[in-house]
View 1 (cartoon, rainbow, N blue to C red):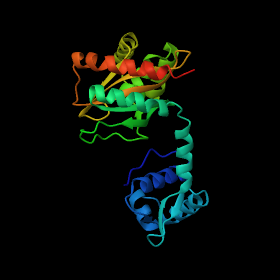
View 2: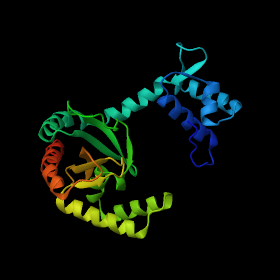
View 3: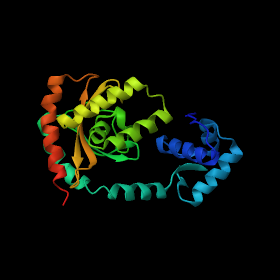
View 4: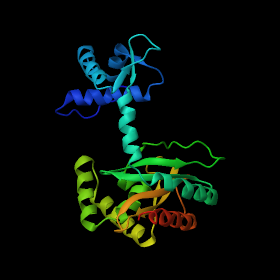
Length: 254
């Protein structure tokens, strides 16, 4: 797992993130030598960073393997705190169960976090091929149906600021910005958004925004459909159920 991100002015932080990502993905505890080999971090630096992460309980020594590390308890504490702040989740499950039985697709709830959307809950149909979607998955707003649904309900100034931010991070051609604006206008008008093979090449999604009492988007309910494309007729058929579910969840705000 020698995946290097663009170097920043805080290399110790970059290295810490690489170590945490590696340990989170590993199927067994890793020694310092293995960590450094797979991340490209020098052993001396890796040792100093590991000791600091240990003190903060972000990683831990795993007793099942000598001198090997695993993810620490504090990671779970942080994740649990963030998860528990998602007050919509308990209300999402019964609504998603009904929606799942209506359209027989994987249903998930995504919330905006900065310029991304994060999957915070999901309900899978019993007879469904395993889809590559997991709790905690992060997606760019403009490439995901959930993100587009949320963006479609934001102000023009918000969308402009978002597009400018994305262009500064990665190339986003002017014609693509224009296409996105057209997509978002259509999503605002219709009440749902669609992504077709933009996150996973074999997967399409459709989503409807969840709004608070000020008509601000706070989440989106989305359904995953096998296939890189979704016909206009299928979109309309699924959208009726998605919009109804999103309205039911929006009504939980008091």
